[in-house]
Length: 254
Ligand SMILES: Nc1ncnc2c1ncn2[C@@H]1O[C@H](COP(=O)(O)OP(=O)(O)OP(=O)(O)O)[C@@H](O)[C@H]1O
Ligand SMILES: [Mg+2]
Image (cartoon, rainbow, N blue to C red):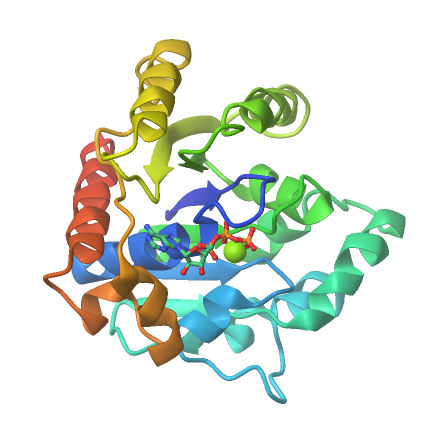
């Protein structure tokens, strides 16, 4: 059965999508059949993997709310072992439409059941909120990865986020655990970045990935080519870092 990892942070622009796409690609390159789920109405993971949003049907929205089959909504990507469950702006409505439905927190988990055996890993790219879409990801997940940008307010939302994870574990998904916090857009030349790293390690010992993702222009360029960074520039520092993160995630398997 596939291990489901939700990439979560309610803060915008911290590197969730970059991490979800490139970790999923790294796992696929390690010959682990992987499904990336775009659970963000912005559809950045969808575009980033070169799937056009124009006229896209069915999407994750139709799977969650329209009763479409998950299998039918899954797309191939430029990597053989990587498939995508895409999203587009329709998903905005889900946050409200879900409220009135039964099993509203369990929709994603139920939708995944029929395909889970086909994958080793399922990576979920979450929107920048702790609304019902993110709750659906947390209920479907075995593990949570939290990308954290090394900036002044980095730690502020983190406590609230981890509290939410704890609540979901207690009430909705006993199997949920934190896989790790990953520092993104790291620039070791600034004392602020070094200070944030130190603080995160102090407050969350044993919960921070050894791998640190550096700021790297190739990571910004790759989505405009519809590719994970490894297919854009394999030797870039961004690509190397996400392959290292992949190795760390694989090493947590046993
Ligand atoms: N390590 C990095 N080096 C350079 N640029 C990066 C890096 N990580 C992410 N970026 C860029 O920063 C921006 C935000 O990253 P990303 O989209 O991954 O964040 P996000 O948390 O998914 O944002 P949102 O909350 O809007 O979904 C993007 O333009 C992305 O290309
Ligand atoms: Mg995103």
